[in-house]
Image (cartoon, rainbow, N blue to C red; front, side, top):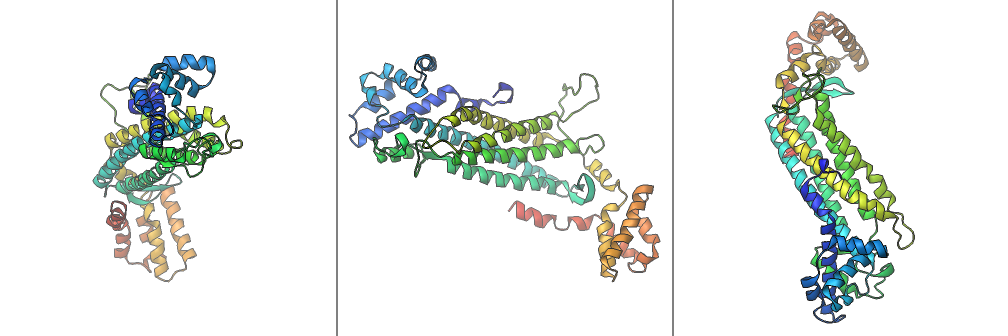
Length: 430
């Protein structure tokens, strides 16, 4: 991933240095197990641990000749560690190293993404409680529907990211497997206890049955969860973008003192960060399909998945990490305009109370369809002529004969729309 959308911690996880370090750690752990069970002579692991160093350029130089990354890596380590290194990798196959290492990188990345989500949850909780009773209009199909509070809107995002955290925790657990089972996964040339030892060393679980690789449905699950989280990022970003439109302007991304919005128009303050998040979310979701297509490989192993994972492994995790941190900052610093929210709430002259008028008419004995038509007629006139709906309602004797003026006045108040806000907040923030 390009540095513009990358954070150092995730980049380090997916660096060549870290990848080869994990490979070396796996080989050393396997050697330790083989020594323990008297499969190879004592001292191999300690010598390799002491003398084996990661030399990325040397590995690449060897690979250019042998056309095999694991052989190049083992050759480089052997050059440094000496004759005892000949016992490394005994009975193992390349995928034992590659797959266990890839899973470890996914676990490392996933744990950072969990921390990122925790930051978003913290900010959403703070902002939701601050605006628990800040009135705003709820919209369906982009059209004014009924009142709610801005805190409820944020609480909805909070609950979604709680689910995302649980999904990611499950995906991390699902991907936390280790395979040291040799060619075609039969343990023909390696003791199964080696796999158990290595798995325990890295806090992984032995893969119950591998072919020559760890089954890719596990990876598809992980990347699918990243795609879902990206969708949640875009959901919030899209809402911010809509609410910052000039016609709405209920909130605004933070705009620094020296920031400029347009090269042509000095007045512009654009929601560029939220737009950026929308684009980044598309990238992360785009990696889901290739991960699903990686499930169906030929027989016990092919490498058609390898080129895919070399790309989507770092890019999906690095991109989502960047997006989550950017989103938490946007949410934390966004400027909210309660007065504009109230102004927009009143812009439709009371149309938002139409359902309550209809309900009261049905309670008085009028059939629902007739009550609907009566209120709809006045609503259309209110909108067309910019007249307060309550004034039209009070002039209609077919309504006032059924509903008292006092009751009509009570209908056109916002308070009842917020009577269960505390109840909802208790369910979300329990």
